Amino acid sequence: MITAYNPTTHSSLVPYMAVLHATCISSDKTITTFIPPIANDRLLQWWKDRIAESVRGERAIFLLLEADSFRPLGARLTGLVMLDLSLAASSETATHRATVETLLVGSDFRGKGGARRLMNAVEAEARARGRFLLVSKQTKNKKKSPFGHETRIETRLFDLGLTTTTSSSTR
Image (cartoon, rainbow, N blue to C red):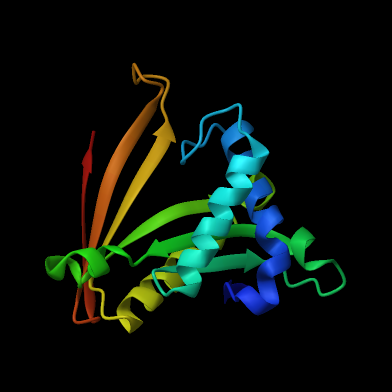
């Protein structure tokens, strides 16, 4: 189940969001924001800052939750993604743009369509907010790269919400 983060309903999830983030970095070698070893207090504060941005309308956060209603909410968090909308506030030429950030899915839940459902939610939110250019930076571990990873910048252009064009470049 995909749901938009709601500070009233989901505030108890912030530590679980930080744990998911830390696990993806430490166990899966995901390159996103922090480098191991990760200071838990820094990571938790970073998430609190992202939540504050979402409350101000600068960011949208979507959660992937298992539908099992018998387990505590934190144990049901399996993934998340953020849509950064803040660029429009600082640039008159970027009101059409948003950035996809921090797409995380727990290793036990990969390959089941969760990341695609999270991206569908982000794309729908971008359209609803009048953003027709989505930018995402995807970083993957690559043994062939001298730096141990490959960064790919992908842009997604929505033509009035009817069609999409995707282009990418690798750095």
